Length: 112
Image (tube, rainbow, N blue to C red; front, side, top):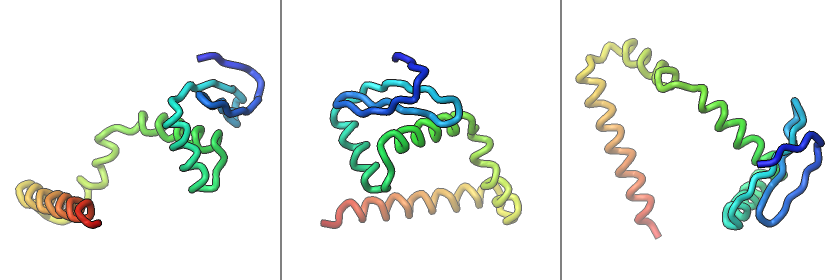
């Protein structure tokens, strides 16, 4: 990966350069053509330009790296505690929910 200190933006067949806003830095990312096409389609579907879409994806990935499982499950733990369910009741409840979601997902995949 090569860093450049100027804010040039460009797209090429196998790569994307991104200019980040806060401390301008341009990086080149070499991507397979299929990935580039998927990114183009997502950018078009969301009305964003390609560098913005890729920069947002990188920012989301970095942010997710800072979140622990404890952080994610905290609100759920509090809700279970507030509900008055026992650990066994909570486990049974979530097992039923998971079964229902899986059944719905399987049914949606079977539809033509």
